[in-house]
Length: 334
Length: 276
Image (cartoon, rainbow over all chains, first blue to last red):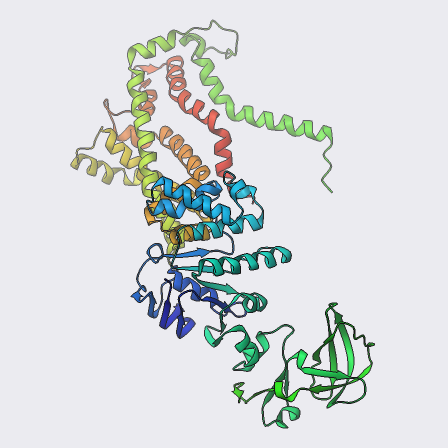
């Protein structure tokens, strides 16, 4: 079980409030991702749940039990750190067994669980090595192994992949998702990378300056962002946000249109523009087009086959059913 | 490009290093040499360097006149005991300063060090009075406590700097893994800080071993360590250089040997964390 409920949780460091009072419910078995730009308080929020930081106000409940004052060792949560935080003086086997040893579990059961975890994570050949002799990906797997052996109520991941190179990151992302499907244990995952958030999460929590901007499934956030921050943050490349007269035509302060929702044509369309830089990814091409609708160039997605000269004249038509409208405060207008 | 060092330059550096090392070592060498001379040879003018009648007489006289083993045992207990006690007190102190610092931690560290700037004789009177009141005069336990307190600032400072090098993530991981504070310090922090703790221990044994002011002032016959043993040879009957040298050699030999064998560890510990 791993249902975690935050009620009016607040955190200040001295005079500075990092997280104003905040409510959040995380259901048992959910994969929840906290995402936001650096300094948005996502790691602090995770550390509050872990118990590594004390809350300034509010309560945290784990499986219905008040946990606010319980020390991290007693909360039954496991954490995977960005720096892996392995014990350098212990072998991989001892690293993975450490939480079991702290729980005074008998040796036979410890061995059984360590071997099982090593099996799942492909670490069986490395059990007698020291962390210093392993690659980054292997170290991260040891850290995950150390977390899974104790069968915690929930896993907390603090940017676990940001120290890995890009290729390895995609692989580990899949492994963690796979692990979640198999264990069905609550996972809370902190990242600044919205691609990780979109690909892994059941539920995404978008944070900015300690405030929850929106909570929802990846597609909900993508299709119906509640404000301009979420609209700009989720999705890659970013949503085009247009202010000024073009927005007023739609009775809004800002309108947003995703790159894939703009039709590009060489003969006719709503807006006229000139092609700037084009990025060919093979499957898709992204054009940056300067047009009369917006002072900023718009990003437009087209098929990989389409090639347009730098400086060529084109016409753009936003698909109106995919137009997002926001008011002066940046909030979504339905 | 690496700086070019010519072989001439290298030879010169080596020669200078040897000269400095010999200058530093010379008093110790002279003491050892003198301990093998007769009293007359010891004060011979011009001084005799290697060509004299080597004798072990001084050693047997010294051993006859005073019980070397008793002084040695006192030294071992006082140096070992005060260091052990100091480490036990300092590890939690350094832990809290390194990992949960308060606004005043830096001030406290400086204040602790400032106590080392006070001349010891300035507190001789109050400490002596306390010793009289508590019946600690000429006891080993009294000296263990006083010398531990005197070296405590250095132990805390050294441990603090080593602990600062340990990433707090690893301690937090231990906490998440269910380790209590005691287990965290015992199974995670201490093993990782072993090089630092070892050099702290070694340095403090040396400091405590050589400590003379308090041992001379607070002991008499029973608890006197080797420093008192040496001092007893600059006696009212006159100075006996050869015997004094023999006593000194016997007193410094154990610590010299310990230092010799542990120098690698000592240097590693003292430069710990300087280069990542």
